[in-house]
Image 1: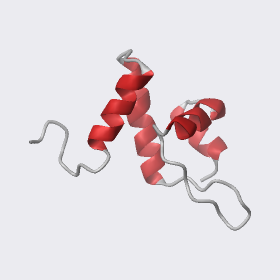
Image 2: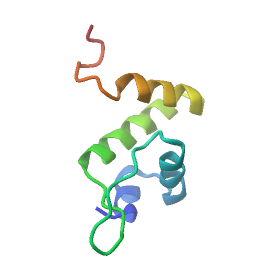
Image 3: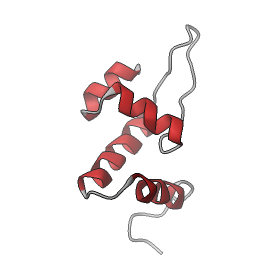
Amino acid sequence: MHVGELAKKTGCDIETIRSFEKSGVLAEPDRNSSGYRDYQAEHLERLQFIRHCRSLQPGHPEIRNIKVRTRFSRRPVGGY
C-alpha cells in the first residue's frame, strides 16, 4: 500500500510516518517498480502499535526502546 493509504488506515500524518522511518522507529519499506514506498501489513501493525504507545504519552526515546525490545521477539505481549 502507498503512504497515503497507510496514513488513512492509521489516522497518522504522512510527515509523521516519514519521521518514524527516518528515526528508525518504523522500518523503511521496500519500493515498488515505480519507486514508490510499498508498505505491508507489518508496517500497518507497527504503526498502530506505535500510535497506541503514544496514547500512553511516552516520549520518542521510550517508543524506540519498546521497538528495539520487540523487534525480534515472537513472544506474545507479557510472555517470558
